[in-house]
Image (cartoon, one colour):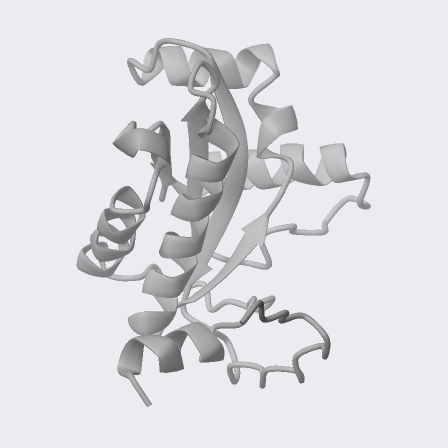
Length: 175
């Protein structure tokens, strides 16, 4: 079987990460793959905010936990040391799709490098808050952005889970 297809079929959402920071080269490769995601009319409306600073990572995790309604001490990023936040330009009609495709590329690239990842939601709610809008402004990011998702990234603590069986009845041929 083709190596790319093997990676696509083997990629799983990881819910337990080692605290070790991935190599910068690995993080950059994952990000580069995200930047090459397909986008409507090649507008490339999605961006990545790469968070490797532990203090900021922990603040985002706590804010995400509060939005999600989980109890104190729960880490919605499952200990992943890196958070790649995907945002997309709301003025582009395909922005949600563009950001979603970027998220897929990030996760598949991570799997191809032996890293674990998981898509964590609530980026939309985070980046509607003034503090997160200020973060973007401080980074020099202007405009109307919507948080699409967080790609929590790191080394897998344990085994990569096996893929569950695929649901039947999901393909329809028109021959």
